[in-house]
Image (cartoon, rainbow, N blue to C red; front, side):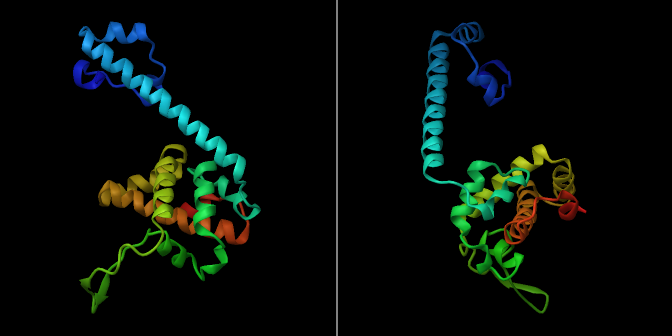
Length: 193
C-alpha cells in the first residue's frame, strides 16, 4: 500500500515497527488508514502464531548430532536444519553427493541421446521439501556469504535468476552431504574455491 499509494518502499521489519500515529500521517484517506492498520495487525498476529509453532516444534524435536554441523552452513539455521534432518533421514543411504542432490531436486532432469535432448525425465522425483529448504538456504546464503554472492552473480550473468539460485542450491546440497556424512564444519574455500 505504501508503494502503490505513496511511492515509498519499506522492508518487512520496518513495516512491523509501524505505529498507528505513523500510519495516520502516511495516508490521508481514512479508508487507507483503516486498511493499513488491519494489515499490520494481521502481520503481527501471524508472526505470533509462527513463533508459537516454532516453539512447539523446538520443544518436541532436537537436532541429531549428525546434523549439528549442518548449522555451520551459511543460510541454514534451526528451521531449515530441522527440515533437512527430518526429510533427508540417514545420509548414508545416498552413495554419492550427486544422488543426494538429485533427491533434493537440485539437478536438471532431461534425457540426452547423441548430444541431443530427447525429452524430460520425471521432474517430480525426489523430495519437494528438501528442494524448498535448499532454495531458501541459497537465498539466505546470497545475503550473508560474500563468496556465495559472487558465485550467484557469476551464474546470473550467464542465465536467469532462478537458474542461478538453483545452481547455488545444488552446490549447497553437495556441501551439506559431505558435512553430514563426514561430520565436518562448513568450509567456504572448499565449496567456492
